[in-house]
Length: 462
Image (cartoon, rainbow, N blue to C red; front, side, top):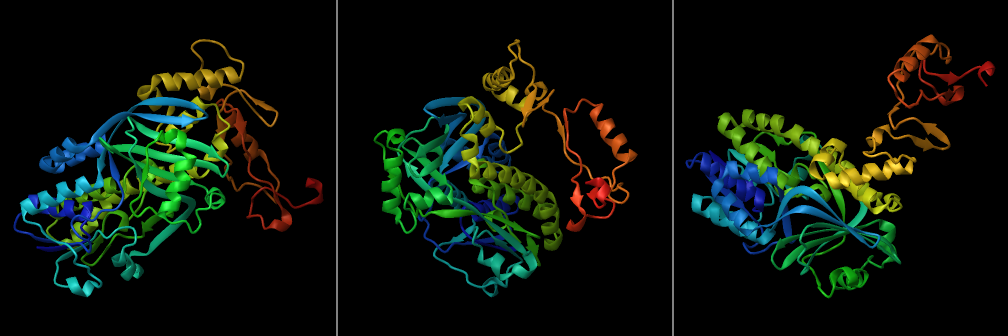
């Protein structure tokens, strides 16, 4: 089989490696428009689970990666003059340039034809390939050229962010929440080598405008941020590398394949940087694609199998990323929380970490939050009850616990009037111990209420 990968970043290189490991007879060409030593960004992040996947796929490149990475098991949160640590988080950081060096060497060793400074502008140039893999990133021209088939949707988020480096040797994955005269800044920082760390600054568009970043070049951006974070940097400097302010685009596609062309990595999907690395997602895409190509000799069947297996995993991660990015878009609302509660909210923001999971990962943090919530309701007993069973007051209404039931549309209102069906339904839910029941919305008669929905349609109801 003749396979062409458009894009020589980690995804394109790793797929070439995996294909050659599966069958040396395949001809794999990776076409990269930049030079071999060009790289943008600073570090990439891998979780313990991802490292396990890489070890199973190619032990040789995995061993080289693990020799080069910086590892940590803790998250550190700087907020309100306090520093809090959360344990039980296994991650490692690696310099992006070093990752490319490792993958380039491994690809060459296995016979992958990697061509640098080779820019492809049309799919006609690779028409002779049995399989074309678009690993050309978030701005994929391949995806755009076949947009009528892939049907992409791109949701550009409002927050501004800039990717920088620093010489601060962070010992944990670090979140900085810094109030300034311009507004609140959030920083996502992690070490990727002995002398370097990634330093991503994020803020609302209002804060960005007040700080004077509109029209600012890289040097001006660094000057402003070094002043804002002077205390946190402690004399260390910020480093630029195509560090321009951007808005994060959430990329989705109705399908990832068309004929013999398939999307991987950011060309197919993106997930907000607050929950991990796009590089990690792209490399795991390549593992799934390799598996499908090995199992299915027919290209079309293999691509269908790849998408069927991989899409649910990606969509679950994108859902978690959406919850996480929305948390960071609305961080200002959480700043009034006590630092320990804000840290807990941060740790559970993606909705993938339950309270039970938090108790296993970081018992001191989970117990501290339990005590805080219990005492806010006047409960001093030890051990405190789980937060869900602590009373809460909402707009003057005292609720016995924190269990609420969302509205449920019954479609049983006759002429807009609720009846026995509603009484039976709500009564059965209330008997289960729910403290707060939200009923269906009562819609005014002239507001276009759906058929058999509760509404105010007669004078007797007013």
